[in-house]
Length: 221
Length: 273
Image (cartoon, rainbow over all chains, first blue to last red; front, top):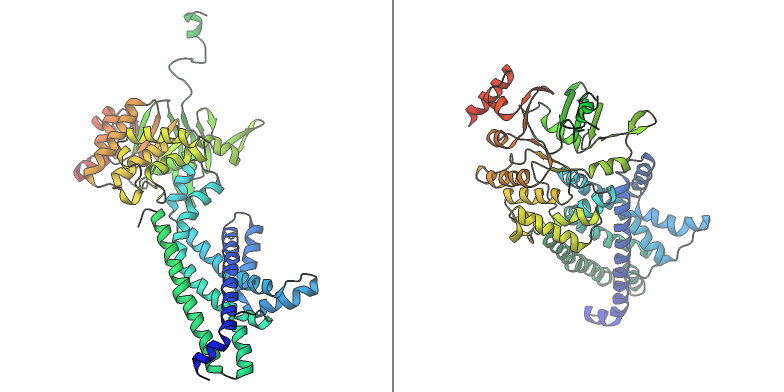
């Protein structure tokens, strides 16, 4: 079977797997961003309890394996009465894991906004919440965008693990194809190329585009 | 009530009103380093007071404490007759809560050495930010106010530029307009010309001169521009080692300094020019 015949025969399944991977990536990324913002800001809260919750969260999700976390969410939480559908368990696990890494990016970026900006906002008598949302965060976002680009690529690749709880993503589909055809080079080779294309020609240009927009908003373009 | 009766009255009703700003035995220290040592300083309403002195003498700290950017370790600061970082509770003063602090801060505006404009907003947006999001003005009102102030500082034509497109002098003028848009009673200028190229210092000092001439504001300024301090101030305070070493009218202090440290400082500054 030539590679073109292989694609002709299994292209549909690979395409549907790719779509699932893309949707998983988008949902996990949204979750990761929300968690990162929340946990990153909580890490700087004056209240030690709030700070503690964020620290414990980050330590657990950064310090243990994503695969183990995925199994926990899918196989162990049901024992405590919390059941997720496998697709949901998949993006929640990936989002929560990468969100913990993102929290540190958020914290670092907020801390690297010059002190004078906080002081100017205080001198204008802005409330702490307005200082953060209107003055500090917009500047922090520009600082943290390049490392977020890296993180989102990690996230995309991390979604491949959900194949292990039988979510029909790209990795799951090529494993199935390989199982029936034993065309390992074609199956896993195609997956490799598709992950690369998604990361290099979709995610990276998207992040560049967001960066350009933010820079224009800052009057730096 | 006749004048005769008033003259013997212990409360002086005229000529000595409650000062707009009053430091009472204010102390500030970082660990064992004492930055301000039991400072007493009164500033009358509408008065322009300049603080000069060598670096590390506590000049900037005075302004930063007034803006509540620094805490104080002892004493009380009064602004407009009310304690700034304390509030009365029964017969004593306790540390102020956030509500009190925010109410007191609304009386004070500050301009910084490094301007600290918000880089993601245009000049106009910088000046509208506080009025809209703190004072609760409508966008239209805030815009009118901001445009008027930008015109006053000569920046009307640059109102849609971001700070990164403006020179230092232009940024500082926008920063002055931004602070004025909050209609403070007290304005603080912290070395506002120190980060500027020599040729643009004049455009900023001219704006401050204009403020003094046209607005009835109480101002406290830290500067190294002795000539500017001399012809704009009502009073000049020379700080040394966390205390006021000498103070007086500009004529007295620059023309006939009495203390040796003041003389040394002024002659050192003269040599530098």
